[in-house]
Image (cartoon, rainbow, N blue to C red):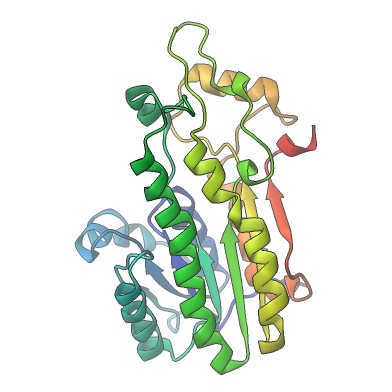
Amino acid sequence: MKNLFSLKNQTILVTGSLGLIGKEITKSLYDFGANLILTDIHDEDFYIKNYQQKLKNIRGNNNQKILYKQADITNTKSIVELIDFSEKKFNRIDTLINLAGTDAKIDDELNNNLDSFENFPIELWEKSINVNVNGVFKITQSVSKHMKKNRSGNIILTASTYSLVSPNPNLYKDTNSKTKISKPIDYVASKSIIPNYTRYLATHLSKNGIRANYVVPHGIENKNPQWFKDNFAKLSPLNRMCNVNELCGPYVFLASKASSYINGASLVVDGGWTAW
């Protein structure tokens, strides 16, 4: 049964690999035997300084490789260079895991008054659409062309609970402050494309041996204010936020043969948030 989850001899391209989720799941992907092409908006010097050393202690074998290539998923030329790099190094991309995206943090909301829909800055809306919609389209389109040539492929996209439900205002109320915040509309709207976009990929690319699914994470703990964690605990069936390592299993599962008959599906990892 363990072999079902083996990623041995697989080449996996991970976008947004230096983000909160990316830095964690890449270790598990490697641990299960995958060759990795990591990419992010940051340059190689940033990768070497902040991340490369941390990978040295990961258990693997001498045949496995982890390579890094800077890329911008909103830039077609950059994506072409990334695909060319991947083909030159590994000849194939078996799985694409797209984590790249933009998301306003609580500090951004506090500083920019992002809670107001009627006054929401159009430039922030356009930025989110460019990354979370146009960027996702460009990278999956380019990688799918590569996968089509090999008659095989696996696309794993990353949505959000806010692609399934609207943000609960009670999560964002700090009783000790008069400042009002909420999850901005740009993130909610741009992430909402993922479910149906994935279903489209799953039904239209399957004839080429390509399947597509998406993960729905929510509430990953990352130095959040205590009031926010307290609010989250009250609203979550599991009474807590998600630990980032709890996302490793879902991504490994969808990348492995254990999920070979899963296509066009969502894997919701939200502690029951959307089950209320």
